[in-house]
Structure formats: C-alpha cells, structure tokens
Length: 260
Image 1 (spheres, rainbow, N blue to C red):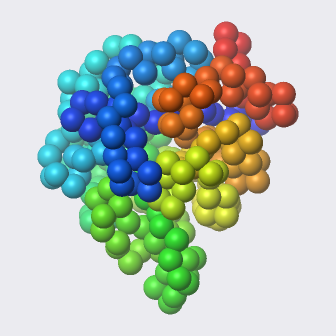
Image 2: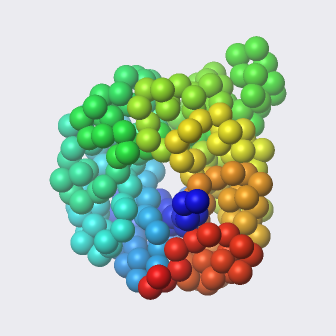
C-alpha cells in the first residue's frame, strides 16, 4: 500500500502568500518562499503553488516566484494558475516545477489536458477542480458543480462527470477542492471526495477545510483520498508537518515519516 501524502498549498497573490475563506476575504499572510523552505525541511511530501488570480486576470503565472520556491525544495512541486497552453506548461517545468495544475482553462478547452499529457506525461498533469454543492438536477446529478475563475463562474458541469472525463483525457491526478469547506477549518468534504475517489483510478488529493489532525484522518480513510492538502493549519503555526505525520502514524495511517 502506498503511503498517504501531506501536501502544503501555497496560494499566491501578487507574489505574497494569501489565504481566503470560501474563496473570498483574501488576505496576505507572508512570504511563500520562506514557508516552502520551512515545510520542506520539516518533512513535507509535496508542495502545490497556485497563482490564484492568474486565470481571472487573464495573465501568465509569476515565473520568478516559481523559480524562487523551486530553489528551496527538493520534493515534488506542482504549480497552477493561468496555464492555457502546452507552452505555458513547459515554461513552468523549465522554472522548476515537476507537475502542472490545470483548472479553468481545461474546463473551457478540455483538450488542453490531453495536449499537456502527451507533451509532458500523464504523471505530470494534475486536474484541479473547484467544486460547490448545489441542488441535484438533470444537468448536475451528483449535486456538485464545477466552478472556475477562482470560484467566480459556475459552469453547469457535474463534478463527478468532469472528474471521470478528466482522467480519460489524460490527467494523472485530481485535486478535489470544496469551495464550501475552503478556509473554514471545519473539515474536508468527505462525501464529495469519496464519490470521486471511487469513480477514478488515478490518485485523488482532498482540498478545502482542514483544521485539525482528525480531519486529515477522516479524509484519508473514510474519504479514500490518496493525499490531504493543508494550508491554514500550517500557515498560522497551529500544527507542523512532522507533528501531523507522527499523529497519523499513531492512528495507523501509512505515511512517510521524516528521515525515514
């Protein structure tokens, strides 16, 4: 059985680490490069960097910040925000990223997933999905809708259907981010995560809502996630990467402990 992963999320706006609640009330909270180094040295498995306004502002990602982070970490490093072409993806790999995350642009032009998978390999293409709970309907039978442009634009896409299609198009991993849970620290959206994890064969990363170790345990076991993405509980110093891993290990979850 593969080890479960702890992934730190760096949401970056104008070069600064930022945090929001349900994609609103965003505020700057520090230096992303310093945080990346801190988490890496404490045993982090993987790092995700999102330029959170690149898509909505229709601009390219800030490569200088990506390069600065890549110089500090020697673990898988995934970057998203504003990726619209294979050329954009290649620029990120040249800047030091190992994986690229596509989101809004993939919804608008799904073949982007296949193009990137062909160019850089399925294992390096991550489909990120920002998802909001809605009423069940014929168009959205799962009751979960994909939204884009930083949560600003509903798409009418059923999240479960989009996840299955994304895998078929070549995505090697899926990030399932619940907007309803984002930043609340009230726990991951277990039902949504499990629904998607059971429908696909690629790894699923749970995102949105982590506030205490029990939330990670729940999503990695009940939610069947392969990895748990965390942000606030690390950024504000409430928990450490190594502390979370030790606690999960004590609960019987297979994780890669520091220096193991």
